[in-house]
Image (cartoon, rainbow, N blue to C red; front, side):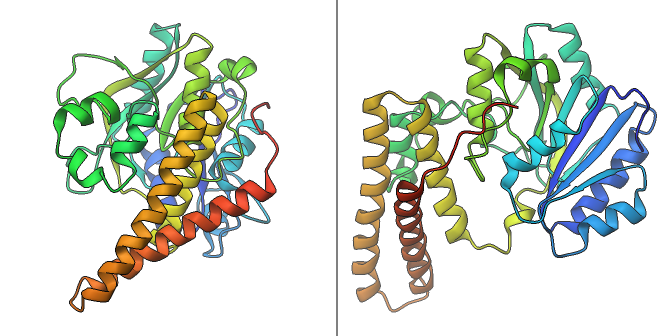
Length: 328
């Protein structure tokens, strides 16, 4: 399904999520069939037959295949470069829409010319609101209290959560301005990218959407969260990579974000906190491993592997370096 003059280019970055991708494409072609969409799948070298399925079952969908996994930002940028609509919907394949949601998001951008992008809110498969997608921008305080061994205590203090991590709201009477939007589902004005640029491909996974949001805000645009809701399974692409890899990738991308956007002092402190925390956590976990012979031993070993993987990733990143991918 590709409209002659599409209003929205839907860009789905896929990596080995064939069942979710099929459900997502089916839902879009059924519930939004009269909306004038252009559907683009950017496949990051999946080996589960995702691209072949999309071509055979959805002949109107544009399928772009990469020879290797170029990351989420790389897939989004490829889709944008091949799009033709004035609005870009960046979308994960594990999303399920109700009819009219995308149209509502378009109406928000059309009625708010000062707004660069808008996202709906998410619910999980049980219908519960998902947190963690409309966070405050990263800061040294956020790293200290929520990305170190202090996290378990800090997450139980509402004031700290609301001040440094995320302002959670239950009821809203309309679009709400937020500090950042989730790349899992974000509708963006394409002309904003003329000055802001595309996603930074140095962020292979995590924080590419945060960096993009920051650049939009810095250019004077607003970001909005709407009252609309979508069902989000969450993280299906990386279920088979293991939590240790995701942990390491998250902290590495967090440090990359701070190195790019923080002050000199913030850059030093963010690296000190995350690297120092991992060394401290390794020491504490190793000590605990020696005295714990119960069922928690496997979890302790997993956390040791996670921190070691992050420290190795930080070392490799510092020695290699990568070019900027901000501009189209």
